[in-house]
Image 1 (cartoon, rainbow, N blue to C red):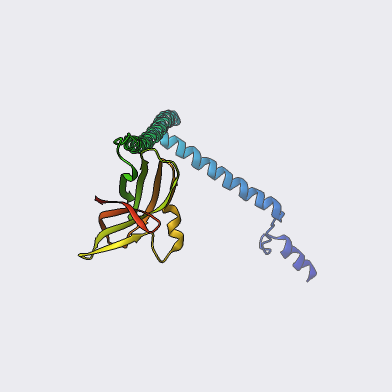
Image 2: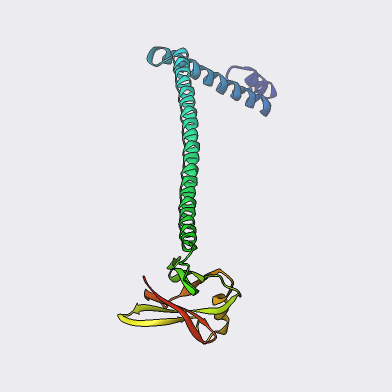
Length: 245
């Protein structure tokens, strides 16, 4: 019986036996990587081969890139040139604007200087000798004009002691400013009797002549029409004159 079993195992009809080789995992991963790399290389080669027939090659693309880079450099150079031109024009405009402002300032200063010269001329004309027979206190000139704000008025007065005075004159100036406000005629006394400090700028003490200057604040909305100027000494009016505005 044992002999028969041995012959059956050695015969062709014996059961099939399969032989498998066991490879390490690292080797199998390496083989997979090599297969994928070969496939990628083949794909790139096929792409390059097909592009040579259907699309632009590398040389054409390089030439186009160089052309675009050249145009970009030219555009940058043109932009820099225009920027420099604009900067120069802006600097020139600033210089011209500063020069214009300086000219306007100089014109205003010359106008103010001309006004002062006119006032000085009027002042010296007022100092011309009076008649030989004239004597006593005289009002030689008076001016009232706006001083910045609408209601602010600046006055200039010249008082002279005619003849050959032997002693100083001591007195004061009083002014009555007549104005229109809200359609009604009103008046303002200068100095204000209720403010003793306002009398000081109008006090007189001189031998030959004295200039008196100051400002008058009119009520809001008032328009000056005339001024009555009086020279007072020892409670008496020695000179009085009305000036229309």
